[in-house]
Length: 289
Image (tube, rainbow, N blue to C red; front, top):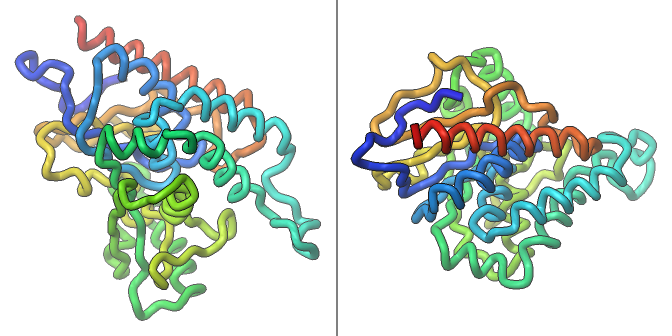
């Protein structure tokens, strides 16, 4: 694993901010990486930027409950044999189980003082996407999907651009604004809003979509910080990783085993987490050498 923009010898392994990219279940790589690197380097970032599933893992990381989240999600995935239930289209149960599992995992693990620890330890900023005012609910989703597909066609790009070109705007909300774990779960799910996997959400009366449409690696929310560690959730061509002074991009050493919206395989979740741990060990060793 080759980082870009590592700290100089005089700076040591200190970063003032960490950014958690989105990526659904791929973000279990971030969980494994953090559980090794944070204690080894004593990381205590003042600012944290996060989007989509990365925001859930960012909050769990700062609260110190990552391992509990991994085990909890694996149990829920083991009880969920499918990612889609077509027969539910005619009944009250959802066709896609993702929103329920996602929300229940957050609520289970971010209570009992976890949110308070997040709010005391760091300013965690969660990134959202707003469609342009001239789009309605359905058209906003469709145009957002179009922007996502256009950016996917340019797979070498770490920071997407099409949503902004089409009038989408990003904004961030601090986890400090949440009064309890239910409000935090709402905020994280709003940042992850990807119909039909999730319902269409509104915040303050306006539609929100997955913040990753605007930027799946939202470094802009911590720009006032000098040194930033950026945790991606999938592989890019090394030449595509931005070279920005004071910013270190880190990515998995290989493609992660789990798919973004695969909520059925505790085995692949564990493999992804274990890959993150191995990559974290390699990263700490590279700093020592």
